[in-house]
Length: 112
Image (tube, rainbow, N blue to C red; front, side, top):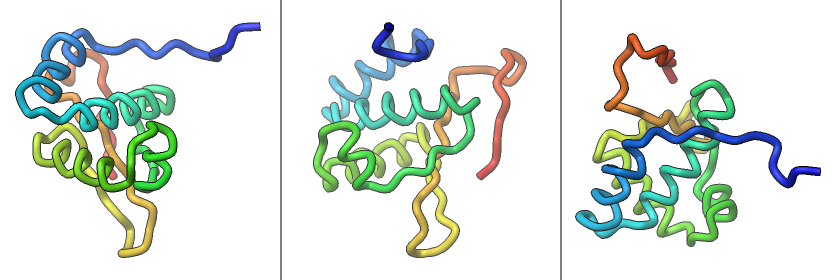
């Protein structure tokens, strides 16, 4: 029996450009790891926003909550993730942004 149910294709840009920018230039490897986590979740759900708290992302990635918080702030600042909340105590919904893709390539843009 296979260990994993599904394979998630990752755009070349993520490994060829984004990894170098986040890990090498910005020195934020946690941001790259959080982006990969959110990218995988979003890809499996047809690019719908991912509902995930800091604690949940921390547990899934092995990072601390403060590292996840800093990583998300960096991703939002770099326009790689858009985060929204229904109210102050709601679980945030993170939309993975892929600015390198054009709309005519089949990407369905969803709103939060």
